[in-house]
Length: 121
Image (cartoon, rainbow, N blue to C red):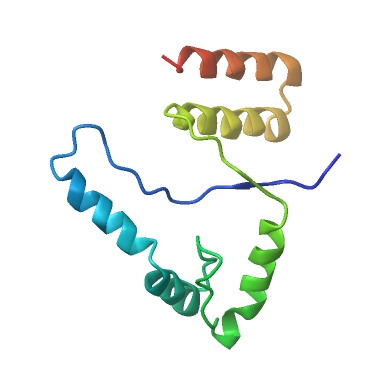
């Protein structure tokens, strides 16, 4: 068994058929630039998406930033699935049903696994 944390968060994406795809790409590049990533780290305490863009974290945010950095050592990227909304719903609902409502685990997980399969289409 190993320690694992799902690495998620916001995703920069461009919808199919976007009318200004070139501008959207430029905006995404800007958001991922060293300058912007350093600012997000410095002012928000967010980990940068680039290893060369860690800014100076404000003193009051250091404990939070250190905790996040520790978690990132064991992070696994969330899968890139177009149907991830269904996966997320299944995870949340199966947890609620099994842990909070104490429903039987195997049938509950089978039900939500079927939900995911049905929503892959």
